Length: 69
Ligand code: SF4
Image (cartoon, rainbow, N blue to C red; front, side):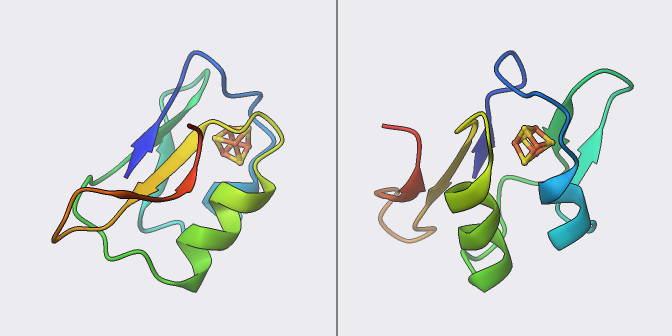
């Protein structure tokens, strides 16, 4: 999983959905881990992020599952 912090608009959606995975550095959202399994919360965050700043990848293959191209 990857967050493009430069694109983040700080809507707070991702942190509300998965506060154990997404945090913030005072200005932008950041990923607290890059090794989370792509569960429903993360997929929802990537799908509905208003900045399209979240990319979810399969842990085994590394292929993009959801998010920015
Ligand atoms: S959902 Fe997207 S825009 Fe909103 S805080 Fe998370 S990364 Fe930033």
